[in-house]
Each structure stands twice: as structure tokens, then as C-alpha cells.
Length: 153
Image (cartoon, rainbow, N blue to C red):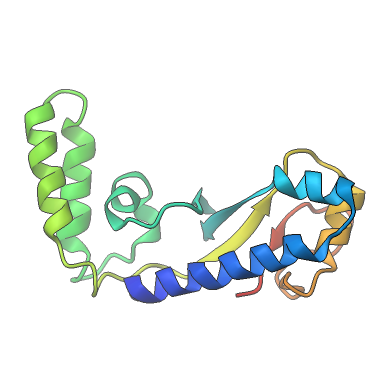
């Protein structure tokens, strides 16, 4: 998906997350969900949901970016940055400047999902959350042995 599609999909996930949290009115569930948070996943990789800037994603989570003609320059510069950031700050700053000048519009991001991470393994509460209409019941293992919860978008 293109960069703008990625951002739109994340907004839909954020809306689903807010709606899911609002669904629960009892204090224990609200406190539990207050400490839970979202991550973005792609295959077996994950990154913070809060990342909305392609440059740090390219540097820290390049696995999320589809390697093609649109991302070649971005990924090459990001790899160069990782190689010099600790030993040549001047060069690292030059690379960051170049990275921010790249047109992100045609860069493709791999297929993503939003998953909930919980502060503790409270299976009864997690099972209640899994029943929410904002949870993807096809992708989420609904059994009691799994704590993985994937949102609908």
C-alpha cells in the first residue's frame, strides 16, 4: 500500500481502538485497557503504533517497507545512516537531511495489522476484549490459550 494509504489505515485502526476502549464501562476493564497499547505488525515484525514518519520507519523498521524502485534510494540512505550514526555525526546529519527530502508518495508499505499489547496476562479480561465487534474475529485466535488480539480496520 502507498504511504498515504498506510496513514489512512492507521487512522481507521486508531478509531477502532478508541471505540473498543469506550465499549467497556466497568472500572477494572477501563484500567486494564488504559495500560494496553497498539503496535503495528507486518509478518513477524512490529513497531510502535505512534510512528507516522517514514524516515524513522525506514531507519528503525525497514522490514515494513516494500523493496522496489520507489524505495531503493530511501532504504539505501537509511542503511547508510545506521552504519555511520554512532561514528560520524556530520555525515549522519547530511543523510537525515537527504532522507527528509525524498518524496514518500510512491513508497509502498507492506500489509499491516494493528495488535493490542496488554500490561499483564489477564486471560478473563483479554477474552472479553476478544468478543468486541472491533476485533477481527477471523485473524484473532479466539481460544483461551492466545493473548494475540488483532483489530478490524
